[in-house]
Image (cartoon, rainbow, N blue to C red; front, side, top):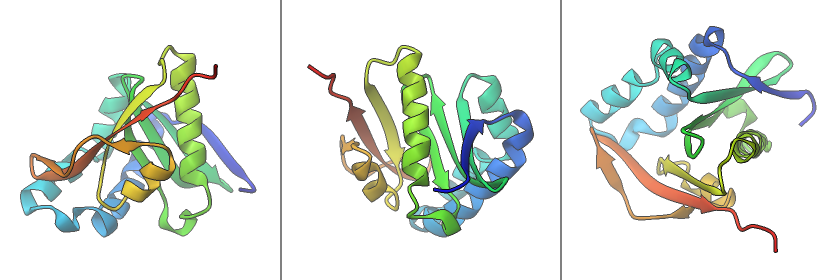
Length: 158
């Protein structure tokens, strides 16, 4: 996509990251959650929580188009895809794939041997399947949050 730039996020980005993710979560994800699940998930998406994640070692990257935040990816522990969100107006433009490839390559450079996990929402299952993730089990629920565990194993070239 023309003008797409991916860069490391900083704590100064936490507010805009939180706003982007919360808008998408409210529209596409929490509809199947209990009120408790919705409230719990949103409590993990505040600017303060995102800053804390960054300080705890989660790696966040943002995608920008013409200086405007278009997406975010976060990885926990070099193996778990924690967040992958793209602003609705940029859906279906390849930004999620570019963000994931960027984050995945960084993980591989930092020692990941080619296995990744993600807890997908029902809404994002198709996206993760296109990225190569495979469901590990059916619907799960924790703290009222509904998710689908998935795994990606990258086959080494012979």
